[in-house]
Amino acid sequence: MTRRFALVIEPAASDDPRSDFAGTFREIDPAAPALSVGEFSTQRGDGIFESIGVVDGHPQETQAHLDRLAHSAGICDLPAPHLEQWRQAVRVAASHCPPEGEGVIKLILSRGVEHGPAPTAWVTAAGAPDNAAVRQHGVRVVTLDRGYGIDTPARAPWLLLGAKTLSYAVNMAAIREAKRRGADDAIFVSSDGFVLEAPTASLILRIGDRYVTPAPNGGILHGTTQLSLFEHLAAGGAATAYETIPVAALAEADAAWLVSSVRLAAPLTAIDDAELSVDVEATASFNRYLLSPRD
Image 1 (cartoon, rainbow, N blue to C red):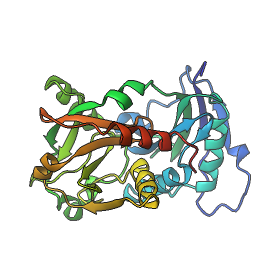
Image 2: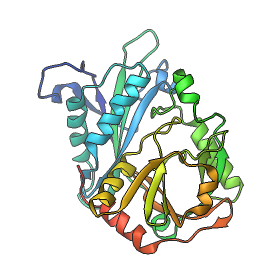
Image 3: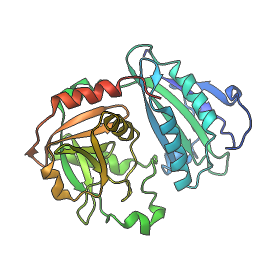
């Protein structure tokens, strides 16, 4: 991709009857100033987003990402996005991605501008980073206490746990801490000893002949890539399960992966300095599937 692409959206009400939303999009120069000083997304991280992987010009799992955008909007008390409007915006952005190779489309919905229009929304497209090495060679991870118990989200929904918000400072701090400890990434665990997720990915474990991921409670963001991969595995006859996983179960894993929309499937080579076998064949199979066109 030779340049970034950016599109501002004039958000439509969720019940807007129009079928063509081209008139609500405005292309902007991604290198030029575009946001107001009073924009809540930058002042407070008050907004939500999605990252959609693009393979050979095809946006992957668009519907699942749009559904999750709407879910996050509901948790954050943001206006419900008009999904057809956003779907059309994704198509426009994808048309600016290269016909070969990988890219990423980001959808951003912010609470808006202080004392001004609300909400604000935009879409960007760019080339994806080269993740070939981590897909092949894997990553080392450490477990980090997320600072709350697994029942906290049910008791304190105002913490917005389970929404994909723009407030990513903690996630980035966790990755920096992991690197200070000699690892590449982290796995969050609850203060009462249960496995949650990675800062920017879902976790999948293979224990025996079963593929297991933490149940989508405890404030876990339900991963679109994990959902798709589980459907693929189940269609092939593999056993999959969502479980409340104690931290001790990490030592029982025969293999493990971090999965996300852009990095795809990265095998874990060590957890807290305990070496872990890499299932080379399964990893290659996962990434072949995840690099195939998926709607």
